[in-house]
Structures are given as structure tokens and as C-alpha cells.
Length: 448
Image (cartoon, helix red, strand yellow):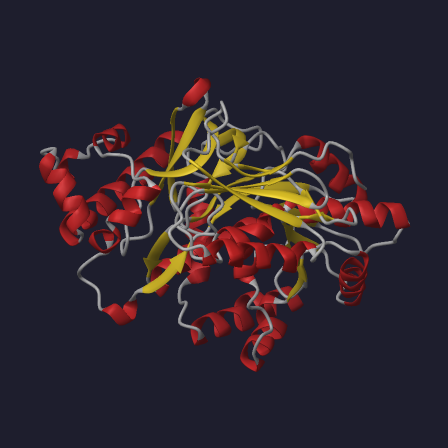
């Protein structure tokens, strides 16, 4: 009864109050699309792609210009393969053509501006309307439920990304959280004993049965629970996202929490892209929202291109998101025909350590150091020892105040007893795989 009340009454009420209408209806569409045959998925996605390309051509200066230059018209898109006629959309292209990418048939007050977390070294600015957020919210609800989340029951968020910490900041947010979203957040900026004990206490208090987390802090929490032999509530499922989940960590987390762990691929720009099912044979693409391609990258790797089928305000067509993966189109043993991502590989970021050996998630450094100074250059942070760091900056730095800000913010995270050295370099090299390692740790000693 509790689950039904939250799913059918309380959640829709708060969603409507906040201007997000039709979420439950779109959840049904996601479910419908996931159950289609491979042939019908292609027909379904082609219909959506045609509409997106047509709107992009009619309403954005950027797409009209590049399509006219190549003698492409919306009606040129007759199959999914015809998307190859359109150029790849890079982060640099978005930065240079931001205003030209925004649809000109909307009022300014309808457009909501966002930015990515910048884990590739670049912050990507983008925008959409509230109506276009609905499919993204619906996707999270649908796939979280598939992984064990139940409406009306508390969820734990183990999260180092500071951009998302807006939960319970106002009376209005607290009311919504208690009567709708029911999320207990662990600010995983630094996983020390006090923070973990407080969150474990909340897990017990709210009888939490579902976790959404970044792998790095969740492994830290799992190690602490195991080492202390702490009895935990019965968990129904865990979803990990934000970082690559290796098989060893997945197995360990499953053993500690005694529940299945689902690897999920989600980004700020386009929302939930794909997620594992209980067969763990790859990540099922969210075909109602996303058309996914993989193209050849360096060293024979496959690079993912994402087309957001739901954002008409700022169309992202063949968006080079910066992650690697191969797409498999065979039927999954779960029965679904939706394409799956095999061996998802993303940008690399090592775990870093405080001077006293505590693990600190690298994701923490992105907003607080790499981008906090407002620097536009590509940056790489290298930890040489527990107290020594090098910050490489690609290209000229015109304002030395940037270096000062970066150092101060590093000291806020790691303490005053560290040494930070800045190096201005011509080029920060990519790895052989084509991935960009924005944070690197050269400490080889294992720290528990």
C-alpha cells in the first residue's frame, strides 16, 4: 500500500507542483520500447530521429548551416544509417557554437541552463526545457525500479559530485524529500570514519534497501562495513554510475551488501544512457531516449557517439561524449532486444589519498580544483606521494591568480601539509586507448 500511495499519488503531486508533468506516462513508454523486437526498435528510433533532425534543421542556426553546406535535408534521413551523413558533435563544437545550437522557437524563460561535471577536462554547457527533463526523470525511475528501488522507501545516495548536493537545503526541499523522493545522501567528498558511521546509522534508521552510488566511495564504505563486521539492513539492489565499475569491485560490493549490483551509464548532458539487467550481459541502451553509435577510435578501441532523441531545445546529434564502448545487438538472455554496451570504458581517474592515507574520490577534484578557478585549459592532477602533487596545465595561463586558487582548494581537500607544483606544458597526452586521464596517482602502496 505504501509503495502504491507514493507511486500513484505523492510522487505525481510533487512532480506536478514542480512543473514536471507526464512522468508516469513516459515510464510506460520506456517499458514499451524495452520490450520491442530489434526490428521494431529500429523503426521506433528512426521515427524519433527523423523528428529530431527536422526540428534541428528548422529551428537551429548551427544544424541548418551544416546541413545546407552538405546538401542534406531532413528528408535525407531515411534509415538509422543515414545519421552518418551528419558530422560528429564535439565538446569544442558545442563551446564555439553554443547560441547557434539553441532552438530559436522558444522563449528565453522556457529554457533551463545546465553544465556537465567536466570529467573529460571540459565543462559542457547545455540547455533544455522542463518538458524535456521529463523523459530523463522517467528513465531514472524506470531503471532504478528495475534494480530494486521501491516508491515510498528510502534510498541512499553515496555521491562525491558536489553539483548534486541540493537535497534538504530548504524547507520546501525537505518536505519533497520526505513525502516523495526519500533520499538519504552521503556526501562522499572524503570517506572518513565519522562520515561513514553517520551514514550507516541513517541506513539503519530509515531501513534503506536501495543505493545509488559512485563505485569508489561505495567500495570504501563496503571495506569499512566488512572490517568492522557491521550488520546492515536487507538491501534489494545497488546502482553504480559516474565511474567505471570493475568486476572485482562489483563482486566485493555484492558480497558485503548481499544484493545485486547494476552498472549504469548516466551523464548530465543526456541522462540515463544504458543499464545492466539482472543477467549482467551488458548495459541495455535506453532506446526511448538514446540512439547510440560506436565508431573506431585509437588503438582499435570503439568510441561512443550519443544522440539524445528527447532534447529539441539544444539538439545533441552524434555527440562525442568522451567514453569508449562496443555495442552488441544480439538478444539478451533476459529476453530483451535493446542494444547493449559491452565492456564500457570511460575516462580514467585514479583514486587519490590524503596525507594520513584516507581515500579521496577523484571526482571531488573536478569542480573544486580543475574548474573552480574558471580555467579553460586542459588540466591534469598528478599525486606523486601522500603530500606532493603536480598540476599540469596545457597552454598559456594569463592569470596567475588561477594557480593560487587551485592550490588553496587543494589544501582545503588534503590539508595544509601538502606541496603543490604547477607545470605549464604544451600538450597533455592522451593514453593509447584514446582516453584522457585527468587525475593520476603514482602511489603504488595499497592503502586500506
